[in-house]
Length: 284
Image (tube, rainbow, N blue to C red; front, side, top):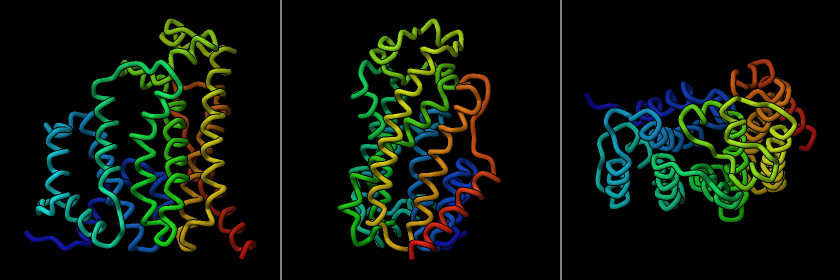
């Protein structure tokens, strides 16, 4: 049965709704056209992630990358994701390269090896999350997307480091340690400590070292919100501040990144979003 483009975007919307309530809460505040475009980009990224983490329906990254190559050549791929993305590429000045870079980052997860340095970690953060900023910049800053792009990359890196700091135990269970080995050594925190879910002063100092780097990236992005389209400011601010709040939740939970899930409650989300709307109204 032939489906409408609205059905394709609804397919993408359901993916973000099911997998990231924080992003969905924030980006559903966008106007319909921009929200749909964000949902389609998210669906692409989620698909890539699921291929690696969940062996998604026998898909391989190579098969997905081949589909992306065909998409780039203008070949018609008859699925909700690709139909929605085609519409987005037709509407906005989006580069295809960040989509390939994203798959390169996912391949690093598939063939995981430890990061030695902070630089290696942040390169990975660009590939799996900074690229999303590159994808979204033309949607949320139509006129100024080239100026906004590096700051959007900063936001992606901040969010990925936040993910890493929230999911240390979950990642370790998958035999992935994203904390750079040299940084762990600097704070005298060992793999043995990690295997025992040790939360001591060394761990907290290590965690805060990475959290400070994430905050610097958040701050750099927040300094550039003037380049966003006016209608994008509140939703994008919401996405940044809701995600940054996760760091506070980990602290409130005694830095337990092992035995419990640290998340922002619905009531906390409402408070953050209300504060953004009030602040923006005062600014105007």
